[in-house]
Amino acid sequence: MSVAGLTSQGHPVVRMRGVRKQFLGVEVLHGVDLDLHAGEVHALVGENGAGKSTLMKVLAGAHRPDAGTVEIDGAEVTFGSPREAQRAGIAIVHQEFTLLPDRTVAENVCLGREPVRRGQVDRARMEADTAALLDRLGERGISPRVPVRRLPVAQQQVVEIVKALSTDAKVLAMDEPTAALADHEVELLYRLVGRLREAGIAILYVSHRLREVFDLSQRITVLKDGALVTSVPTAELTTDELVRHMVGRPLAALFPERARPEELGPVRLALRGAGNARLRGIDLEVHAGEVVGLAGLQGAGRSAVARAVCGVDPFTVGTLELDGRSVRIRSPRAAVRHGIAHVTEDRKGTGLALRQSVRDNVLLVRRAAFGRSRGARDVRELLRSVAVVARGEDQEVRFLSGGNQQKVVLAKWLAVEPAVLVVDEPTRGIDVGAKEAVYELLRGLAREGVAVLMISSDLPELIGMSDRALVMHDGRLAGELPAGPTEEAVMRLATGHELGEEAA
Image 1: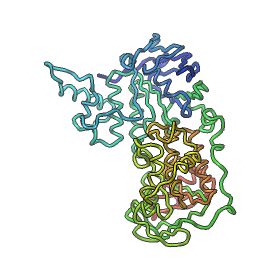
Image 2: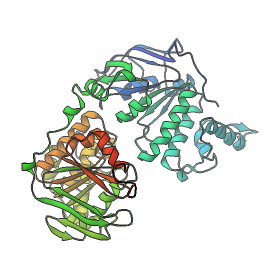
Image 3: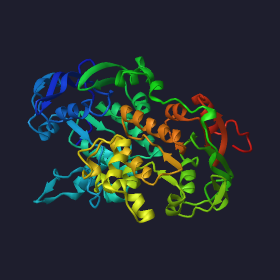
Image 4: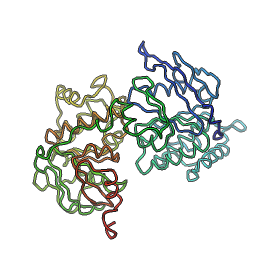
């Protein structure tokens, strides 16, 4: 097993021309072209349904194209199965991990291809080969003998990539590789992608996170409705231009109109000197009808504010006021009963019961907090109000797209008719078109008088959505900015630049 060496940059490792694919008579790829070069990160972007996954499956041998050609190192190939594509040097890292948690790193990397000596698995060689791969990628801190379940998510992602590369891959397709990672873990993925480039691997990188696309890729290909829109060097595109290629309009046009001051109601949520083990002296107000953005670097305390307001890690000092009345929120159930809803940053881990139906997820909080449900008609109205696209209310949530899963999370909280909505990373892992729908939902709730406190690591999103922005630094509020601040102004506060030497 080895990491593939460099291939000439002048000739693509993969050359796809005029690729077409249809299902049940409906064409989903319309003559798509794609080149992948050694040592290059090539980003493939587009909304859900644009054809990204289908094109990736054609490359991986899961689908045969109905027309067009695929060449590997200049030779035309036809893959009859993923195994044939793997033998040709194509490896896929899927968004959902395929690791066996109770087996060791080495057992996962060599699964199905275990070296054998005298009729038995040669564990020493298996572990040595795995250690060599990890060493070449600079990941010496991962033991081949440790069970995968003991590793943090970021290191599990490393194992997934090493497993793919163990087949002598020259092409690595990565599907939303940071979807399961926390912000502070993404840096490890960035570092690993850099090492893969140095090793001469051609990387096809699929992600909805535009910042990652610009940080990592050298070329971007945009698909829309199964057709190729453009394929250009990353340096020649701006974020606005990329969004325009994807959805037909610039980034700024995705955000609904902000509330005017005269449209705001009274203060609905207020914190006065609130704190706990993680937070100090938090003072903030959110009016009925207002969307207030909460910014800050990873670990600054943004999510800690959300958890405290919603009773997960309650405030131990100061006061929390709802509609001018001081209340004690000591549990999530108490928060719900006081009209506070909490959309967490991890919809799959804490926001949804993935193997339950859309209907059961919508009613989850209401049943738990109030012991009663809504009628079938009310559920249908809720789903219609957030425009969930599903086969029906009985469909398991795990089979929905990321955007529709997020809409189900919002519908779940609308079912309790909240006065305050705290949303943490509301559009993480969903495409640009689905983001626009979430923005409209949040702004629509604000127009109905809900006070919205929105946490986001995506600064253009936070700036575009917020009527005001509050910025956290080191467990406390560093300052407040009016509507439409610059990213530089937010970052100056987030890094403690404007707090003064003693406070920072």
